[in-house]
Length: 163
Ligand SMILES: CC(C)(COP(=O)(O)OP(=O)(O)OC[C@H]1O[C@@H](n2cnc3c(N)ncnc32)[C@H](O)[C@@H]1OP(=O)(O)O)[C@@H](O)C(=O)NCCC(=O)NCCS
Image (cartoon, rainbow, N blue to C red; front, top):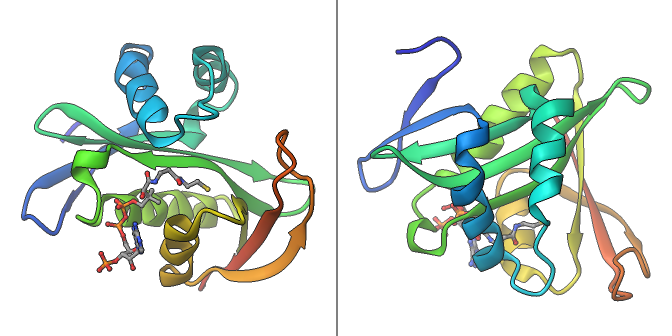
């Protein structure tokens, strides 16, 4: 196994490799992004910027050599906490545990860097994602009206990581 690559098995029994994103993954990541957030996908430059500024916080999940999901997280040193910036799984590969695998790996790496709290924002109307985060142990901390550009409220969720 190449260094830094972690292997999991998903609910369909397939090997899922989690590793840092590379420049060559950008077309697949962009495709997943457009399917996952049709109204407000991140433009490609956001991914390129993340690759150069926060490469350790940009992970992909690969199945049979294809990228099927990604997560971006950052460590906010001044707050001593991790922050999930974005996560998406290709629609054909959802409900197989891949999102959970990506979150677990992000949390593990946040923990390794000395933080014991993770925060994230989710659109109030994004019930599937809210359910997903709840299942992972995230709890609603507060609501932030008008957080998103289109005026939608963000739900701020938080999880305390176990030692
Ligand atoms: C949210 C997302 C990343 C979840 O990825 P996934 O690989 O399907 O997640 P998992 O298979 O690990 O799901 C784990 C659990 O989360 C919950 N969950 C996931 N998707 C759900 C849905 N559509 N509806 C209700 N609960 C859901 C379920 O409890 C699920 O367990 P179950 O399948 O045994 O019921 C994926 O749906 C996605 O890419 N959504 C679009 C992008 C998005 O909204 N990202 C979050 C932005 S803040």
